[in-house]
Amino acid sequence: MPHTLDADAVRMWCGLALDALGRARADIDAINVYPVADGDTGTNLYLTVESAAQAVDAAFNGHAASAAASRPTLADVVRAMAHGALIGARGNSGTILAQLLRGMADVLADGAAAGDPPAGDPPAGDGAGAGDCARAGDCDAPAGAADAGGRAPAAGAADADGLRRALRRAADLAYLAVAHPVEGTVLTVAVAAAEGAERAAGDVAAVARAAYEGARTALRATPGQLDVLARAGVVDAGGYGLVTVLGGLAEALSGESPAALAPARPRPATPAPVASDGQGPGACPADGAPDGGPAFEVIYLLEADDTAVTALRERLDALGDSLVVVGGDGLWNVHVHVDDAGAAVEAGIQAGRPYRVRITHFGAAAGKAGAGAPDRPGPAAVLPDQPGAQNPTGGPRAERATRAVVAVVPGDGLAALCAEAGATAVATRPGEPPASGELVDAVRRTAAREVVLLPNDTELHHTAAAAAAQARAEGVRAAVIPTRSAVQGIAALAVHEPGRSFDEDVVAMTSAAGATRYAELAVAERQSWTMAGVCQAGDVLGMIDGDVALIGSELAATAEAVLDRMLASGGEMVTLVLGAGLPDEVAEQLERHVREGHFAVDTVVYQGGQPTAPLIIGIE
Image 1 (tube, one colour):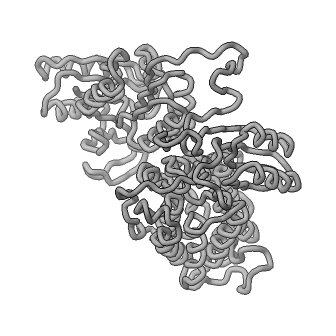
Image 2 (cartoon, rainbow, N blue to C red; image 1 turned 135 degrees about the horizontal axis):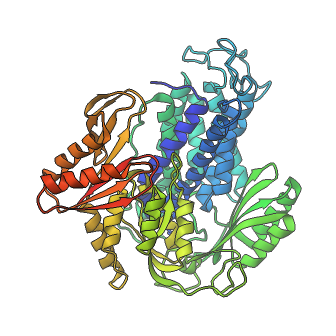
Image 3 (tube, helix red, strand yellow; image 1 turned 180 degrees about the vertical axis):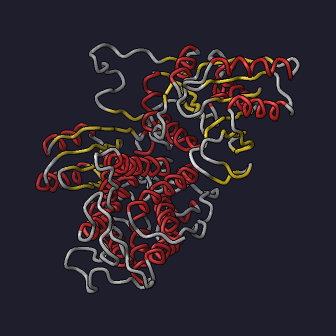
């Protein structure tokens, strides 16, 4: 059903956009041919939106944990979204997307602030809605007036006109952030979204759908604006990502999935000339740049005032190209391509305090290595931890191990089990799945040349894929085994053999995980419809391969029924992973049940310590 543009809608938008980018990430990477075919635009956009979504979740969690147990306002949430995107922006396209979100937040927060009730207070009356005007005093209709769809926006929500103004402000700010804008890129798509919204009549959902359709139409036209796209037979990758994000907004507000985008797959074509940028569409090469451009991409966050940033723009524009500077209010994200990376960092030091400095060598993308060199960027250096440098404690850097495994696990016992098997464990917290950045940090801690990632949760597959892509950009060979449960991860670890080739090891681990069926017992928190019928609060749910298959009243009996159903189709080994607080007597009862009822089936029990699932079951 249609939704108002309020704090909850923004949270839903972030989740839908992140999920859609996760599905499209690899395809967007594959069509990244302009200005350099460095194949990371989809990954950069995913990481940027992931950071924005985390900031929005933190805003909700912070208000819920406050003494008043209040809920965040629209202004709180859009500002958090923009800030999260700013500090987490990756690459040229991600940096421009962060500026687009900031432009939207400027308008939506100003409009919401005019009518939001104090945090924790109920809305006052009907039609006293925030967001009736994009900016204070810049609205023809009286506060609380109904939009063209006939409904007045709720307090703490934005109306259709507010969204129109927000999209226009976003496009304008993005153009200002780019030193040398180029049409046929994400900038063009952003303008088309704003124009589509401005032409649309109706409520806020209709405006969001019109913005999506306008952006989708503009995306299809990008090959006619850039010859390199036409020769490769692809649309602009950054523009494709923006349309994907706008699709999430339209779905969040309308409750309906928008018309699908055409598949983002390049067709075989004559290689296009390589220009200077190392990022995706929306990148802006210097006028007249030769096919070979600067050798390094430099990105950093910068604390500086507006005057210093103005001077910084001029200096960096003289040093290189693809310059994008976004942000404001003392915090900026700087992205530029240069031959002298040190000079770009030094310019930031003169302007203020740069940090999170990241330097990537483009290799052949810079046109310095000659014909036949690889297109993808070389390993990235995150200062001060550069190759050949000392570690942060002042000692020499350790030699890289050959291969490592990084596993995501939901309990301390499982983490200890993985560590005993030689893996690096990333422990999850209830309701707080790890971000891709945490997985990348774990990969770095292994200091390995090759890394296998075990997400152990279907919801973390996109996160793990993004982390693997980032690891590859840093020179690590990485693979993700799509494990859906901790017991599949245990099975994969059991056959892990660093002595064989990487590909053989990945195949063996994948086969072992795929041969392991999994189940989980959980306790229902509320009445709900399930695949097995209606459950009540307190019922024990037996979930097999992710779907509720059984509903019971007692944990041990339900577990026995789950085991019987799974073993009816065969099995040689049962793995029981006990959750926190589950009595040992239950495990003993289940072991006895398997031993007495299923011939030649072995059982192994682990103390997993997971706080949410009392029991996880694996059948091999």
